[in-house]
Length: 195
Image 1 (cartoon, rainbow, N blue to C red):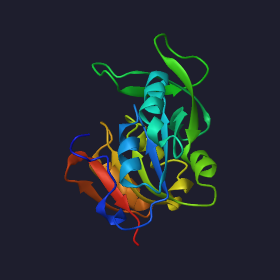
Image 2 (cartoon, helix red, strand yellow):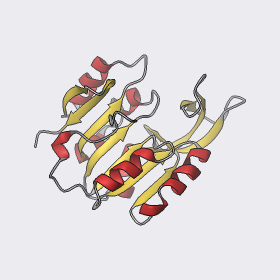
Image 3 (tube, one colour):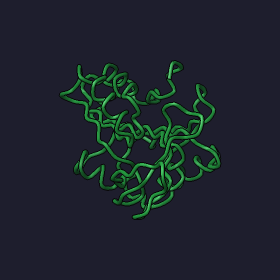
C-alpha cells in the first residue's frame, strides 16, 4: 500500500473522475486515499469479510456522504459464495466456491456480478477507475460474463497465482484495454481504454 500501487494510473490526472470502484476494499484504506485525491468522486467498495466491512465504514466516516462499502463478494453471477482466510495471512480471504453446502470454518456471503454492481452503482454511466484485488477471483471476472468491461475507463488488477500477469494482460486486451504492468508492483496490471 505504501508504494501507492493501488492508485489510478496517470491517465486519470486532470480528468473528471466521478466514480471509483474498489473490489476487495479490505478496511477501506484505498477508498480513503482516493476519496482525498479525487474529491468530486463517489467511491464504492465491495468487501466480503464482515469485520473488514465494519472497520472500512469506520475508517471512511469523514467521507460518508460519497463513500459506500457493500458487504459481499464480487463474482461472475449473483449468488452466495463461501470463503475462508488465506493460510498465513491476517487480512486476506479467498472464495472457496458456491453452492448450498459450505465446508466447516468458512463463511457464507452474498455475491454480486460486476454487471449487477455497475447497474446498481453506475446506472447508465461509466466507472472511471476500478481497482480489483480479489485474491484469485480475477481470472473468472476477466473471462466470464464480461459485459461490464465496456463501461470501465481504466482499471488495475492485482494478479494472484496461478493466474499470471501474461494471462491477465491477454484477458484485459480481449476486453478492449491497452495494458502494461505497474512498475510499483510486478503483480499488478493496468488497463486503460484508448481515450
